[in-house]
Image 1 (cartoon, rainbow, N blue to C red):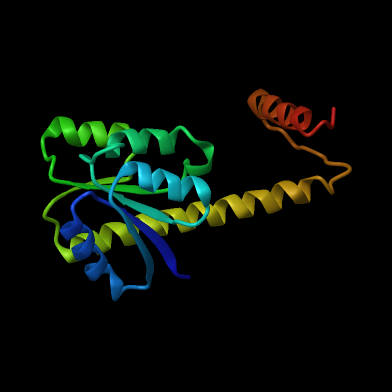
Image 2 (image 1 turned 90 degrees about the horizontal axis):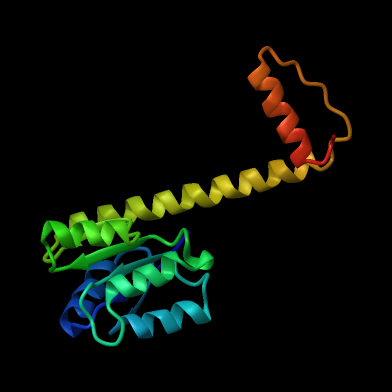
Length: 171
């Protein structure tokens, strides 16, 4: 499956280098010069991108503000965001991770490291999507259930079974 990446950086040279490094990969790439342009693209098509590669310091809407906006919007809760920035102080890294970055890379980063981090983030996203689909199928299957028998060994297991039954409106 081909992944779609959005590169967000105000430096045209960095955008060009990132596009060149990743173009031979199996990614569909798009790039924008600032957080506001990124937000507009993401907001118009929330399911279009599988990962965002994000600079921190940009005009109009900086990377941390965009990251916070994305993570506070349920549509983008699972969207992996990798910070790629020259801000390398410990406080900067903590700020980026606390705001919801999947990973924090400092510029310059090698091609191998960048591709490995992107691959890892996309694998995590793929696993999350598969798990969500599996849980959805299982929940759907439970709606077919008309009668169940539980064998509880402890009071705690009995409470859990009763709580599950109440959530399913079986009681």
